[in-house]
Image 1 (cartoon, rainbow, N blue to C red):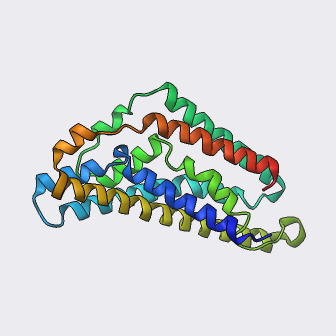
Image 2: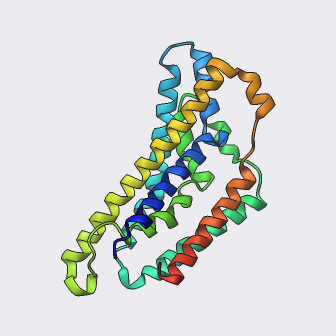
Length: 227
């Protein structure tokens, strides 16, 4: 059953998650500042931010698309959503235990920002944070039919709707992430200076891991409660 207020809340959650990822230095906005300072070209920062956004977008799709192929199995909807919640919680616990940043990220050439951004998002479980929200959205967006009642045509319609929702969630999230990261990068480059980074560096690693646990728990609760 369609619930406009719930759908609006879920889409805002996608946006907030994007802003949260964007302001996190671990998602790459300091690299955009570095690119602007090193190249000293007007479009250097814009290009860097665009590449970071592209990599993040592809990482979101890499996580969401496989789930979009499973959503049409409505008979196992609860199990899929609870399983996804367990995976997200597991990633959060792993990041709480293992506080070290992946070493392979430092080996990626600075010019390959899209590839770096993709790997960083995957390593930090950024896409997993969206999975419970995405699966909840799939209950409200698209055809309100069942595979058992309408056969292969209904199954294909559900798959198509789920894939489109995955692209939309990834896009909305990435736009929010890119804009918020760009705002910080421009502010540091033009007004605050590099001293701001050294004096005001904020580490979101613990909060990031805990947020994964919270989002995963939300996914399990909503699946169990049938909301």
